[in-house]
Length: 175
Image (cartoon, rainbow, N blue to C red; front, side, top):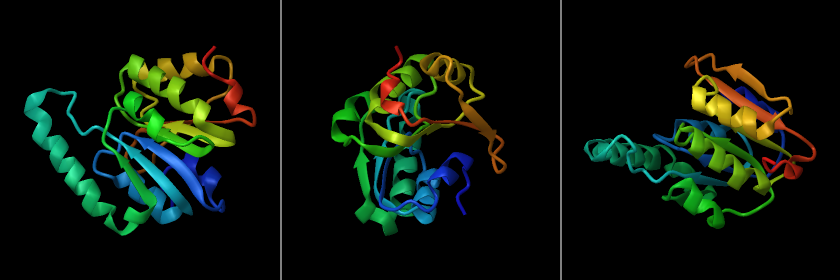
């Protein structure tokens, strides 16, 4: 069963192509791959700790855990071990969904929205994690301006996901 409410919108669709920015240990990616009909899932994470060089080993452990956790789906995964702003050219257009859970700083979230929303097809899902973080909240609200953003609390971990679905999604480029 899909554990993040925004992804319920995609249940029943076939051959989905999507992006997850910020993979960490691969828990969300595994849930997506197990519960949706995925053709290709781009997993973008540089696995270099923004907490400093002393935390680098933790990033390497997270990557190894993700690779192990997702090994049964390797034919559907495209790993991109870069910061999202440098990975955008490695991702096709006409995506069915993006899920943003990378760096939670305002400028990073804003940049992810600017770069990746135009790659989502009409009617596609744009979603992300930690809407309860101030910088994430502000960046998402500013980007979509007066458009209605949905959000929901995750029952398992208590965090808040945000999502946006619109038939004219490519018209919204943050301007």
